[in-house]
Amino acid sequence: MKDNTKYIHGYPVFDETTGASSIPIYQCSTFKQESIRDSQPYTYSRFGNPTRHALEEGIAAIEDGRFATAFASGMAAISAVLLSFSQGDHIVMCKSIYGGTFQLVNEVMNRFGIEVTFVDETDLAEWEHAIRPNTRALYLETPSNPLLSVTDIHGVVAIAKDHHLMTIIDNTFMTPQFQKPLALGVDVVIHSATKFINGHSDVVAGLVITNDEEFANQIVLQQKVLGGILSVEDCWLIMRGMKTLGIRMNQSVSSAEKIAEVLENHPAVKKVHYPGLKSHPGYEIQKHQATSGGAVMSFELENQEAVYTFADHLKIPIAAVSLGGVESILSYPVTMSHACVPKEEREKQGVTDGLLRLSVGIEDTEDLVEDLMQALSYVKVSEKV
Ligand SMILES: *Cc1c(COP(=O)(O)O)cnc(C)c1O
Image (cartoon, rainbow, N blue to C red; front, side, top):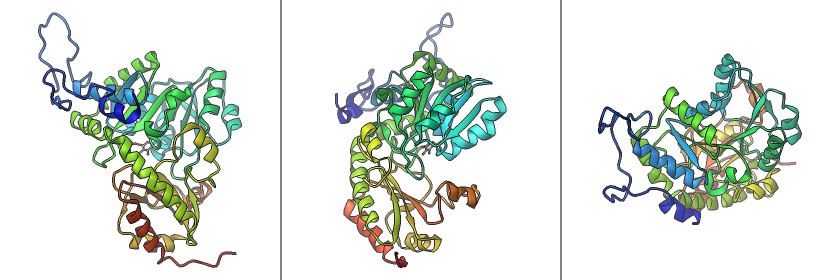
């Protein structure tokens, strides 16, 4: 079965008991038992709920994995995965990591004696050199946020296999539509389903997918005892969103490719970071491990004044935190995701005053391009040498 068919038919999409064309929302905390003598499959919704199980089976099918677990947010999913490690364990992580994950390891996990070393994700030698006797896992996120650096998944997986380590990937930006990490040898896939998988900016959710039964059981235990389960309404909304993942992603990417090219050739734009562009340093690796450059890019204008002028004139994309919605979303890392990072450190990371991130929605390409161009026309262009 190909992907678009799978999104609609590849998992339980219909209710078995009534034939209802979508899985019902089982709005219950508990289940009446046939007898108090023995247990039954569903007993209490934190342990398991048919609506949530349908979503979990669905996302497992879509990621070509065997086991999936749904959480109340991407961060709850990441926490469950990382808290399955123990005191004294060490993890190597890409340094361009989601801000929440960074805070989790630096402000919470460190208190439990789980150590993390950050490496330049684009340098395979750094991954290898960071490995110690107590290293348990390599954790990657590619392309990264907000600068879209690309990590060589095959390369990191090969290093992990040499050292008998687990690999974990945050696949939020690519989605299974464009990047299937389990097939590339990665052990655990995490999603903030808040983004493209749900796709409508109306749910916060997280997912963990793996083929490793033992690890899957560990994650189910974490779901049960940490308790960060996804509510049944949200499970239902994500199943609804998932059915259109393919057509949404394809539309967004076809616009993103066009937009990246147009921005790259615009005199007011200093640089475009988009792994679908030939000029991107990770272009070849991206082509090897994913089937597109995705629907997110970032680009640099001259300075903050240019950013404000541009954003004030933009009509279609909404200015907001987050990404992956049907609507295009413009984010300004300086005042949003990186507001807490000191200016010097932020600039060292490449997050300059002129950097903007664009998550391309499913609006008509022509409208998006026209809107971006008219807004850019207000930006003063300094003489280029
Ligand atoms: C948004 C995001 C997260 C966090 O997910 P939430 O659903 O907001 O908890 C993690 N990783 C990436 C790459 C994200 O974009």
